[in-house]
Image (tube, rainbow, N blue to C red):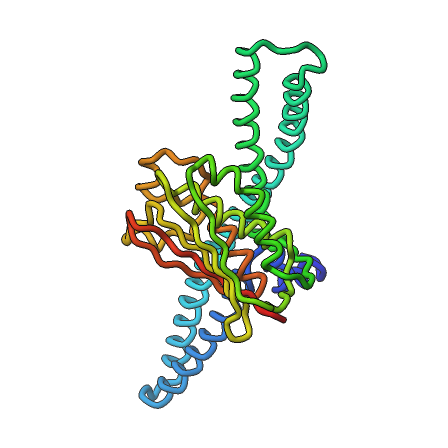
Length: 315
């Protein structure tokens, strides 16, 4: 092994960056911590042995055996973590590559469908137009899934960069509500937006926060069955802006609430209604809010609705 390779192995921050995990989850860092603990254990064993065992050879043999056992255990555990981290990295890279590869053909398909449906080439019949609409709806669903998978891949590989700027959060929320208003009306849902006056600006990435708010509002509308309402509240709370969205939808079963921010999780009552979704939305929302310096939480009751909230620092 060359000096460069040895130095690469000892470069813990670089290894953590490669695996896309924080320092405290990095296999090399864990091995370092375990090494320190083992050295402490060896020294303790030696001093205790010299106190209670007269023969120095036996003390040395016991210390040596304990050293070998502890380092072997540490090596096995670290290698296991390293394999898991490598598998996770490869999975994220695979998702990223596949999503990028699917993006272009889907965009081309969408463009072709729009041209055909416009009648600029050959006016389609009513039945053909109906089939084209079905294809377009499904291609749009696939595009949304690919977009979510790309965001997840960036989160897991620590490549989700935030381009922060100062803005009024209420203006962004009003635009999102306006865009989702047709979907809400079609779902027989009313949206109400309450906000405090003279709210200060927040320093955030507008694109990422838009993704977070869109996901929360889309979920709130989608999981209301029958006529319902969604109430959005925005106010200042200490040194943060507090966002809250409340619906009177199907809610989340109590025993499943601990899984709500996990990837691909969808509660059983949602599956019963056959509501569309990938189970990635809330995982993405949580990651965006926390990387923006905020906190997120919720409370929910089955068949009565859910309330999701998050905070964002003012500065």
